[in-house]
Length: 321
Image (cartoon, rainbow, N blue to C red):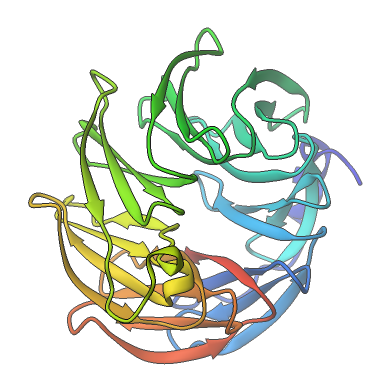
């Protein structure tokens, strides 16, 4: 397949789809596809064939491209969001799990689960420009808005690694709960929230001192402790509320960020992991990996209003608005 910088001009010749209310993209690990829905009506718009085991979805800063981590394909596929066609790929390394863009959109940083590495790849040339060794089975990754710091989780080592982007070195290792997975950063950048899948908790880290300053414990009724496995996490723009997917407990949790209290649980489907929030913050979408559907949640009432089939083992959802 042609490098991205060569196909960019050719992609401009493709006919663009008519403007709409927006689109949803849902990756399906088992089917090796990304399902596309119209965001307002949830009408199916098509399916995009990708590399094996598509997982994380990230839009380029200008939203003209959707990047898809294909774990067993050992690459990141690139989708033109106007035509919904794969137009390139990035060879970031073996078994990419999750990834982020630098603020200028020129570099992709990815966690490579098989190799225990966080890699950096130049988007224009497709060349690997850095490899940072971390603990075994890295998954979660977050870059600060200023592009100076990266946080990555090691599921096996139970660590959060702090990476200095300029030196491309780990500057701190923070002990958290058992099997840390994903992150959310408070809007002021002062606190980093980390989901600990096998502890049933969130760890809260002070980003200046790297100290763990608090914990949120999840206890939905009717579930054994070992079945409460928080994974996906996101915060509202004002930093008042966090939503966390509970994995094997089949619920999501609503957490007051200031008080760190769980305000409620909502049944969404089998093993919710992926979670996304619309720009107006009125609707949540949650992918349920074991019930093969996506829950549509009204934020105001905190209720599921619809469940949509989206392929086998849906991993996450991306919103193009």
